[in-house]
Image (cartoon, rainbow, N blue to C red):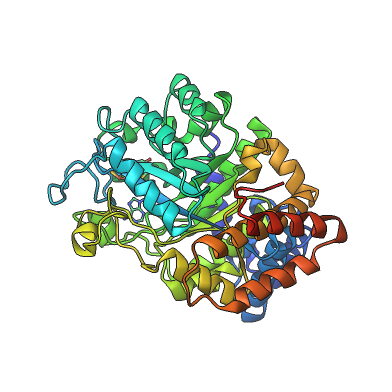
Length: 462
Ligand code: SAM
Ligand code: SF4
């Protein structure tokens, strides 16, 4: 935990000399080279208040995002297996002291039903989520769940990447988790501020700040090299959280040779019987939130930024353009909620309140109307492009040559199999126009993939 240097972070936050427009502009210009910026430069950007410079910050984030990712937005949904938990996180409805929710652990058959529903909605990529419980969510159960999820096939459609967000494991346990062929292992530190962390986690194994902080290294040692980190914004000063998270990313880059594959930016939402969620200690407003995302995009240009359905649709749409690269859609945070139709009872036992209740289909439509390309691609992981191999390709711009065709093919698959009847013919037209804009080399290969899909083949990718 020594690498989170609180003193240094606080000194950066308090440095009045960063209120200098020339310094701020210079940091933006440096970031536009897409090589990242230092912690100090990120702190400088946090001080921007001038409207013209703010516009420059947001347009630099947009430019970097478009340069690296094009107009792609990768889609996924969380799948909650259990709300049983032995921890007592003061912000979460699943905490052990909350006696107001009904505890539910899905059976493997119920997990299949949930995954089947998500496949029928059009999803290809899931994020498996659990409360922490030695019996209810032990590793054998998680392994069984993943095996069953991967085994489902619905007319050639299936879940092709299961990412996992579960409590930190020991090195041995991570080896076992790796053997389940997971995609990314995600873990949010929640807050990097030690004193706040101690207050927020009064009991249970999650009390151990250092065990959680060093989980990515243990996972990496065990062979999991796509790692996601995150902070739960609202627990402490957002400036501290952002800089500490970037310090974590730097540390990973230095010690593992590869930085985080993704960064998540959950914001605290109201939750049943969760005092810190219902009276947020350091609420982050929408404008600051936008600034956080833009600075992240400038600081770690090649890291995926994940935006969840915690946020409301209008804000989500605005944030897509400042650097977000992955979004969840059609999400539910209650175990068993995808299959059920009674929305009221579902939401009562959820982990927290959602801001975006739209279906995947509605989100996909909106994403298209905004000029983005929804991607259901899972190819990199299945082609061995993970960890430093992925980063190397991303940094040399080669990933774009692979990802855009794959995104187009998976979107075509979605249009063929899952899009609602009222789907605008414009989406198909936009897709074909984008194929035409591809460089000659990849255009023909992409056209071939699309023909294969039209002829009934599924799961085609580079
Ligand atoms: N239980 C495991 C853990 O805590 O590491 C797995 C992840 S937990 C189910 C998923 C994430 O939800 C947490 O890491 C936390 O950041 C987030 N979360 C918890 N309560 C929240 C709330 N009230 N609003 C928004 N996000 C919340
Ligand atoms: Fe349990 Fe995770 Fe919720 Fe904490 S955040 S109470 S560990 S489910």
